[in-house]
Image 1 (cartoon, rainbow, N blue to C red):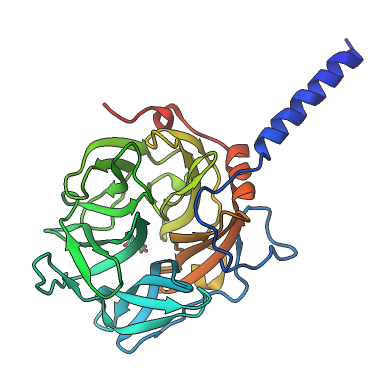
Image 2: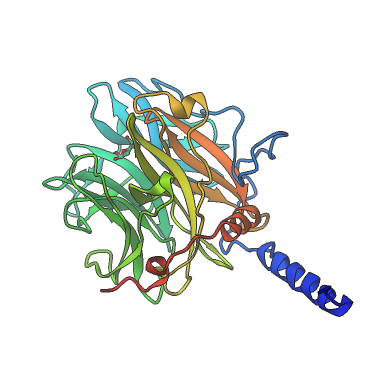
Length: 362
Ligand code: BMA
């Protein structure tokens, strides 16, 4: 039976409405950052919503005296430029965190010395190792969150307001844990942090959880956010990446998804959108990766086939997003997208499951 004109018109309108809904103008809720690093999508880039900076990697080998590699690092706007906390693998093989400053968020000057953390009573505090730092500003304070030894791999935290004095805060979680990522504002009056409970080794499992705190000391009301899936690129474990970006559609989260191959783990970048008021509820989750190791600096290095997002710089006025990711545990890479493109893509390839959409309390 042929469709009547009216029915065809109706169907077309419905399809158009659905497309408009997907292509809606998504807004970043946050400050304008007009100097966000940027390069337009190059001709011939893949049809994934993220494209790489053409001069990648932005930080090469032996960047500092006594530091063989910098990777898995986090940056943000500061003053009229940018500041960052960098995972530096020292020449004794032990990772630590170094401070860096930049005018353009691409060329970085590093401080020669490790970040000098201190306890609340002013005594020097130097963790045995410190890696995969994230840097998040909440209200007037900058928080650095990393992985350190707490009778096994767990989360360390410090705060600063001036990048001169770095005061350690109580370890938020019991061991073992990694990939803690703070939200950039309180939600319903509490600080929120994602984390990924793990083992103390190379962890062949792992889901993302959410915890709340009224004061950055006591953490509780833990919720499951999302786990591994049947999609092979994220079928072993996942972990939070960059601090979630607040958008009109929800919290945009770039995270890493891991698969196990006969040649080791492969780390890709995934994307999800969490409910603004109840972020343990996943609204959309992309079933396909957004970026996977393809370039020489992602495929070859100290640990091959790793793309590991730790930060974004984003501009509310234009919707531009610059993603900072570690490459092959050796370099720092930069990639770009826009909030419209990436949110549309995540929605079009949505594969959210009932485990993702539930509140995450059992
Ligand atoms: C994880 C973390 C990351 C690292 C990744 C790949 O367990 O240690 O720092 O990038 O492994 O080696």
